[in-house]
Length: 279
Length: 116
Image: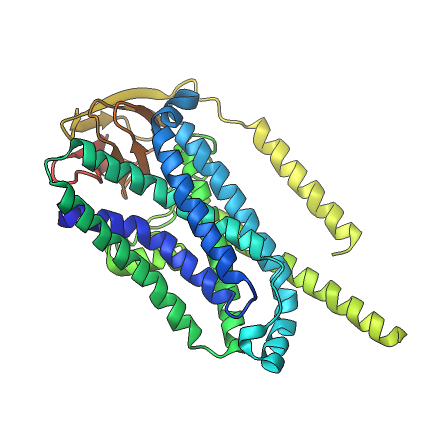
C-alpha cells in the first residue's frame, strides 16, 4: 500500500513540478489559469485514452511503438517550450514594466500561453498515462481492497501536487523583475530536460546509438530515486548517470534556444530604436 | 538573425542530418534476447550477455497487470502493459552487473544483466 502511494507520487511529481514552474512564469497574465487548467484537464483526459491503448501501442513497430509515441510527445513539448523561451524573453522587460505600472494582477496577455498550455498537457499526458495504467492494473489484478488502493492513490496524487504548489508559491515570493528572470531560466532547463529524455528514448528505441556511453555516474552520491534526485530531475532534468548523447542534447537544446532568444531580442530592440529615431 | 547566419545554420543542420542518415545504424549483428514476466517475476532473472555489444531485449509480459522495466544502471525505463510485449535496446555494456527491477512490483520483480 505504501509502495502504491510512492509510485503514484513519483509519477505525479514530475508533471506537478512542470505545471508549478509554468504557472509561476505566467503569474499575473490574463486568462492564464484558464489556459493552464485546460492543459492539465486535456492531459488527464488524454492519459486515460493513451493508457487504454497502451497494449496496442507497445506492440507497434516491432515493440518500440511506445518509444515512438514518447519521442513525438517530447519533440512537440520541446518545440512549445522553445517557442515560449524565444518569444517571451524579448518581451519580458516590457512585461515587467507593464506589471509595475498597472499592478501585477492585470498585466497584459501573454502570446505564448497556448504553447505553454500544450506543453503542460503533454507533460501531464506522459506521466498520467503510466499512472492510469498502473492503477488500473492494481484494480484488476491486486489482492488489495479497492478502498486501500483509492486512498493510497489519493495520497500519492496529493503529495505530488503539493510539491508543484510549493514550487509555485516559493517562486511567487520573488519580486516580479526577478520572477521572470528565474522562471525563464527554469523553463529553459525544462526544455533541456525534455531534450535529454529525448536522447534517452531515442537510444532505447535504437534510433540513435551514437554517444550511447555513460558520461558520468554519480548515483552513489545522489541516486535518481532519492528525494533530492527526484525533485532535481523534475526541475532541472537531473540524471545521475546520463549518456553522452543526453548531455549533448541538454546542452545543445538550451544553448540553441538561448542564442535564438538573444537574436530575437536584439532584432526587436533594433526595430524599436529604428522606429524611435524615425519619429 | 540576419540572412547569412540563418543560411549557414540551415546548411549546418542539413549537413548534420544527411551525415547522420548516411551512418544510419543497421544492426545486423544485434544480439537478440528475450525474457518474460510472470507472477511479477522476471524469467530468466539473470541475463548473461557479451560485453561491448548492442542487445535487443524483448520482454513479454504474461501477467494481466502492467509492469515497468526500470534500471538506473542500464539507463532504461519502459512500461509493458499486461499481455503485451516490448523491445528494449541495451548496451553496448562494459563488463559488470547491471541490476533492473519491475517498478510496479519491486518486491518480487528483480533481475540483473551480467555483461562479460
